[in-house]
Amino acid sequence: MHIRFFNIFKRHIHWKVRAHTYKDLKEIFFAEVISVTFGLVTGIFLAVFYKQFLLVPGILILLPGFLELRGNISGSLSARLGTALDIKAIKPKLKQKFVVENYFASFFEAIVISFALSLVAYIFTFLVFHQATLKIFAIAILAALLSNLVESTLATITTFWLYKKGHDPNNIMGPYVTTTGDIVSMLSLIVAILIVV
Image 1 (spheres, one colour):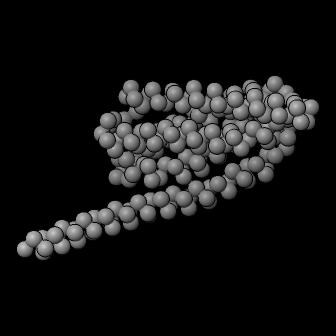
Image 2 (cartoon, one colour):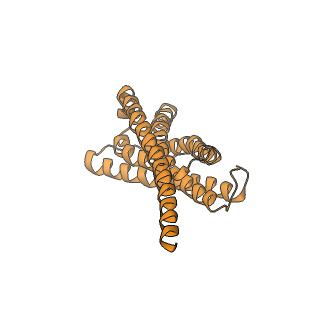
């Protein structure tokens, strides 16, 4: 009797685990496919607008770190929101203290880190190539503000939308913010260069 009950219980758990694993695998797989596909769009933007990037000394040194910055900040934001949703600490609504605080914290992070990146790019360009411009600071900070405004808003809304639709945001948002962050960052840098230069 006890052995039979244990076998039924084990099969029931096994079926649930298998279904949950399949759901996670499907969400992660499609998120990664979309990430890789749209990652090519970032490369296309770089190829098309490379002349604008060459106008500013040090911008190509700044670029890799800047692209990583956007995905990391938005990824952290969506992870905090996703975890808070999972433990029922917040509801999927925008106007909450926790959401607003994390949203504006992402702006502070973007400004501080973009300043640090532009400082490194400026010093390296000056020491190695003996050519540097202070415009790189304005470009980095302006691009960070523009990209953060778009990307953090998009990450917050998408996290809540996925949760409402029954998906796990922690499975999808990592590749998603990496892809959208690269595209948004690239466009923001192009806009900032055109404005400043």
